Image 1: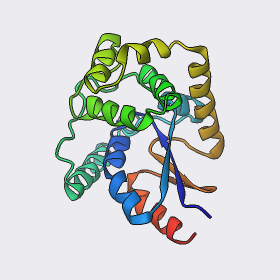
Image 2: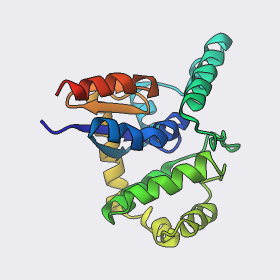
Image 3: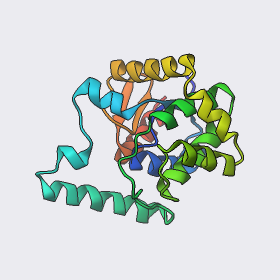
Image 4: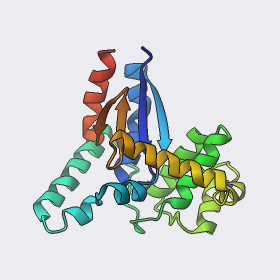
Length: 201
């Protein structure tokens, strides 16, 4: 069996950024192919009744403090020193995720994701602003204006909706979520379990 990980992905999750930044090492260790599947986190939340941690645990300060501590531990361990919490958070990622579908169709998903995560979680840009969006991708060497236009393509919109629905049907309730075959793993803290599942194939 080929070693493949499906990575349910949305730019809106800072933890998805952190996972993306360790993926090169993960793939080198495991020999696995990682299939990024663009989905809309807000759509997953709406379909499952889930909420972002900052809302879900708003009345549990010790839980939120631990969430932040765990994130900092991950950042420190992997030396992800460029990470910055986006000052515009939460950013509506509908445009970003539609653009990811368009980039995927054009064979540019890898470059698009790298540019997008850097814009969101290193440069702190307001990526739900169309002008900021287009400039960020133009600056990264992609055709930001064409990508922006493509976010209104009915086929692109439909594919993002389909991806999101399929992720929910597989059991996803948040991001980052990973699938190895039918086995689901949620959260960056589960990467070790993902690696173990791949080793067992």
